[in-house]
Image 1 (spheres, rainbow, N blue to C red):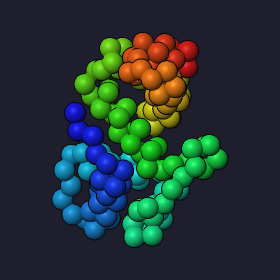
Image 2 (cartoon, rainbow, N blue to C red; image 1 turned 135 degrees about the vertical axis):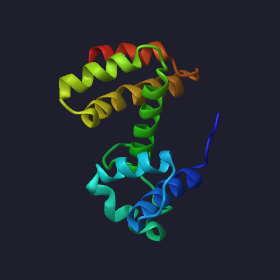
Image 3 (cartoon, helix red, strand yellow; image 1 turned 135 degrees about the horizontal axis):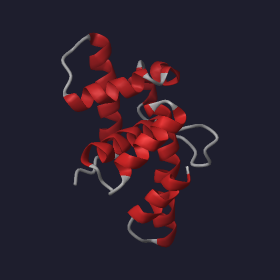
Length: 140
């Protein structure tokens, strides 16, 4: 499994946006990433200034959304949907898309559950539990 460092992940986000803005050829993953950034105009100024924002830190208290984490969670959910893992994820995505009338807003709801699963795994010092994730999604 590919596990990029914080800097590698951020560089990928910045470079995907830079290439999109410059009209350069993008890989499919870069294109998806740039599309996600384009859906978040509140992040455009940040991604237009990589030099000033590459090392920016965000407090874990949630008072300010970490745009890097937010976008990486979008990418994680996109991958989960594309490969159908964990089992049941596609069905939950379709249901939430119908509920919110937006794929993007459905993913935002899914992020809450993804974050909850990760938080529980860290707190309990266990592997992430897909059953916890799917159960949370079913309650959304």
